[in-house]
Image 1 (cartoon, one colour):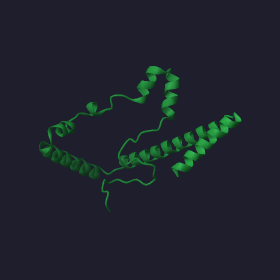
Image 2 (cartoon, helix red, strand yellow):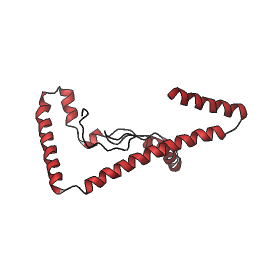
Image 3 (spheres, one colour):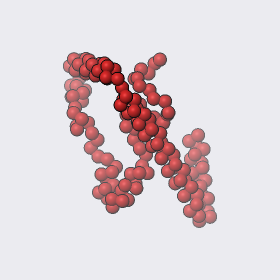
Image 4 (tube, helix red, strand yellow):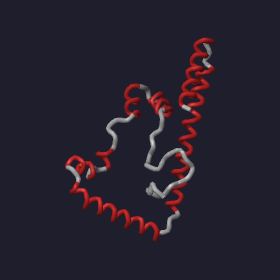
Length: 147
């Protein structure tokens, strides 16, 4: 499938150069923007549905989830002493230390005007926000990979 897409893109580029036309290039840009916006829409819809389910969660279920998370955190803290030193220090990093050091947006803001920077970031491929975020419509609320 990737070879077909690559051949299509190269064919469009060849046609655009041969006939000195910008229409095939605009068509490729249109296809990319459509795919990018569809991916963003599906991810946002799934995120909205997950937040909707969390909003209407019963207090008893929420309390059980909080207790399970506390138990898992305590088990992780108790087991972290057996890890090698380099790994144990990574387990105890704070949220601010775990953030990426550089981003495309900051780099683009430095080199380009603000409006061009936002346009370039818009067309960059979006990054997944959590472990469960892929291009699918079902919502998986468990981390059990084997059913």
